[in-house]
Length: 231
Image (tube, rainbow, N blue to C red; front, side, top):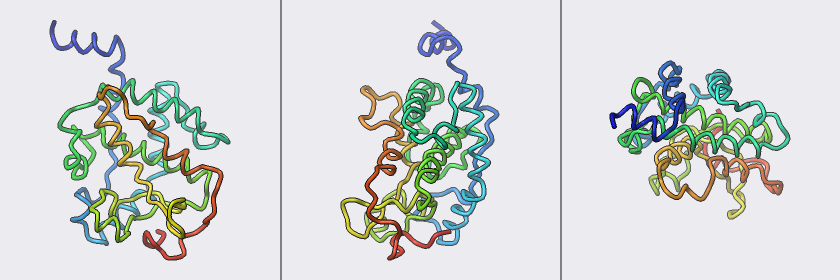
């Protein structure tokens, strides 16, 4: 069996649709593409400012992609409950992301240093997935916002979220007066890098969104500036 026939047998006829669409997908071109611990604080804020300036446009781009598969991003952004959309998004990812999976792209160092274009265009789709997940939280919890993870603990423990754009303003229920840094891009990359794993990861793609939208909110701001200033 030749390779095209083998791919068709694995994914089924017509299911290479995502791979075809990503050939013309607009890249997410943050100004500084390198591992977070090698960034200067100025470079880190430049990346954050790029996200804030571009996120509305990226939602349009991502929404157009999802519509080609019958998903409506507006349902997640504007419905009272995004659960149905998040369930459909997870199912879509696990059906179609295998088409664009490449073992060398599943390496964290490749992802963190990527310009998210060309042969790495899948990382632009993953970033747009992250923006969509974060913006669902923002739409339902207006006190949340995009910022940088500048916490001492993330620096000390060498977390991948350090000095990268994350969603802030979600109270941490396990620590008084503390807030979480929700790194949705890392979440999307985790699912991509494990997309062929059997069984699937126990937590679905949108679980952190639902966690952030839980009803009990006892804290409403970040008085200590734990994760850095709001951009």
